[in-house]
Length: 503
Image (cartoon, rainbow, N blue to C red; front, side, top):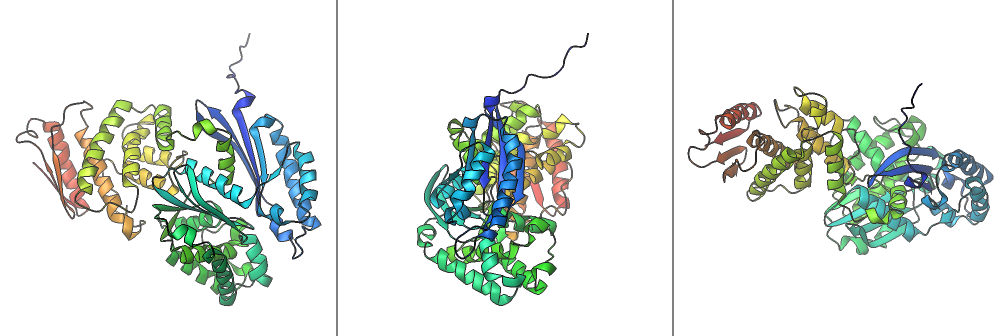
């Protein structure tokens, strides 16, 4: 007799789905909730470019309607297995503008067997902010921008609460049709598109530039495409205006969309990339944006978490850390021990040098608590295994740039320090990342005994690249293991051109 080894299946009520009928793409995301954690189990995205079928008379043509309905036929089968109460279907800018929107929505609801809601621009902005805030936890004010196919949402908020929000009638599909006629990528076309966008943004700019924001986050689309280009070029950095200007010139040099080839730019984004780039340049210039990072979510995630209101107040970062600690069987007591020492060193460091510019404390906390992730595989190269794993697992609550920083810290918390480690970082964050690596390495050494109440009161003094650790008299001699590890660390840091003394 053969006994089934199939595990018990999830209850259907644990499954949730969000459908976002955007002006450029239609998206379906399906999640299940397990032990308070949200797991994405399915995603479908199709380039429908609904907005390209919207004429000057604000009527959607038959071809665009058919493309949309055909896509929904695909979505419909997947939605059959999810309880109706756990599904949200929304449409955005194009169906807000189209005079014949009811023609589309009536048939769409029959296909999906579910109600479709055409949400207002303000509601779209609110849901985008919720998705960004949950997946990219922040402290202080955040400016959030989402460039869609026919609208652009701008939101300033704090934690889970939007403060000001606006939806503007400009998007990468509509601007492509309007300002890049015949697919020509000329300087004049770019200038016209940028100026048109700036007129719209300047009308609402005062609502946002009067706020001090700690970070600017871009939600998917054009910002994601630009980040992928930077990665392809070996640049680990936020989006900055000089990068945008360089990309604009590359587009102009290509002359036409048919000839547009930029390393790292996906073919699916190529047609609408120049128009999205023009809008983003206008936003940077009008709102005085210094840099922008990529968020972990947007409208679809906002719809999902809106159905899970009890999860909105959780500490997303610590939830992610604890989830990975459990999954990879990390020693929680040692993780806390290393974190406490690392933060003690970090606070002493921050009293002496400027470590602002990145959320260093958050990255250091995560790296300290997850530095033994690779032990799940084996010991000898566990720093490399851990970095690899953390480069691919979801890091809800952290931006992509922060996740890269955590990965870098884990990779270099022991053994040799990668000599080319910081070349991919922008100069403004390079020194901070270098300091975080040094702090984490020292914290791991000082916690090597895996024992509480072992360390005395000690002091870190910093003078440029010269660091000095001061312990009580004779303490190091009484602890030869730590003394020997620190001696080896002096040599490792010396190879990087750094100076460490301990006494």
